[in-house]
Amino acid sequence: MHLEEYTSLKAYNTFGIDSKARYFIEINAISELIEVLKTHRNKTLFVLGGGSNMLLTKDINALVLHINLKGIEVVTEDEDRISLKVMAGENWHDFVMYCISHKYGGVENLSLIPGNVGTAPIQNIGAYGVELKDVFQSCTAVEVATGEIKVFNKEACDFGYRDSIFKTRFKGKYIITSVTLSLTKRNHLTHTSYGAIKEVLAENNCTDPTIADISQAVIAIRQSKLPDPKILGNSGSFFKNPIIDTDAFKAFRLAFPDAPFYEVSPTEFKIPAGWLIEKAGFKGKRFGDAGVHEHQALVLVNHGNATGHEIWELALKIQREVKQKFGIYIEPEVNVF
Ligand code: EPU
Image (cartoon, rainbow, N blue to C red; front, side, top):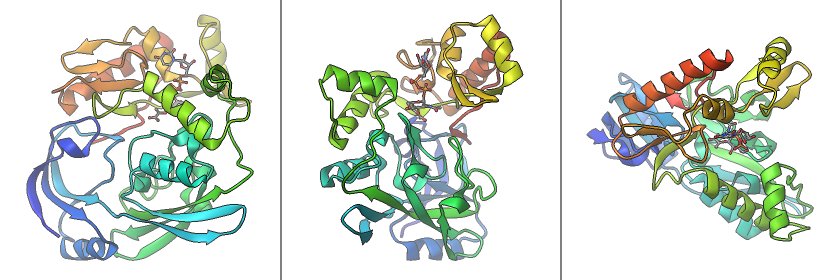
């Protein structure tokens, strides 16, 4: 274990922001993590997984722990299901590909989501009609204050839309070290009703899709809309889709009858933030090196050398103008530091 100082975090966050960490340690074993928590009690900690859901607006005056725990292990298995314990530092998409090649079903709709397995529960990653919580069994985490290892089952995580207890009550209190997921080995419960997936499968004349077909369809859709962080720095959806109540929705529909929406419950309506941002005139716009993606307005991008501060300024401008035009507040989905 090596304590580095003034380390550039550019390669460690998918926005490609060149912030510096005052201290930096790569964690390759749980024992190392527990030791670091003990020996560096006096330092502020900053936990870094895949760096795919954060915007760094300044240098990080803390000890950055890069969680690099690796490994996949079978917990239980029968003819129908398999339960896998996946270490936090495994890349999420590589894990999805592992499942596809072993014919384990459940995560195929979550193909190509950037980030690591250990951070997936924090914001309950989701795409194309599936969320992590649908396959989640439990996760193991180390309590920062005590170094004790705790297990959280699904109920304890209190999952919501891009939300969990690790973003609310237990924010900064635990470091997730592994996630256990329950997957199907046969009779896969596929989710293909999401518009874009249906279309791609139909184009490919795929009437009885396998999990590999679904994964390929999702990869094709994501590649057509979402920029590859290796080519264009980004953090996926920058904002959450806002949920508004019946009164606000009625007024909104009256003013904007063409707006897409999803009914979340009889009294809650989700409006795509991408649509609001596009209609506010931001799609494809560029302010220096900070920009809005040309194919998906919900994604802010770093065209090269934008600072985190410049991207944040753009986000605030978008937030203000969307509020002005539609009366709707859009909340960032990424964690801003
Ligand atoms: N839309 C526009 N203009 C845009 C973007 C979208 O009008 O620039 C409209 C679309 O036409 C569509 C609606 O908004 O009617 C929804 O768009 P899309 O299907 O692309 O999905 P989204 O709601 O914008 C959410 C997730 C994505 C996830 C997709 C697919 C959030 C915040 N984002 O985006 O997640 O991949 O659905 O399930 O919920 C992420 O979290 O990083 C992410 C990429």
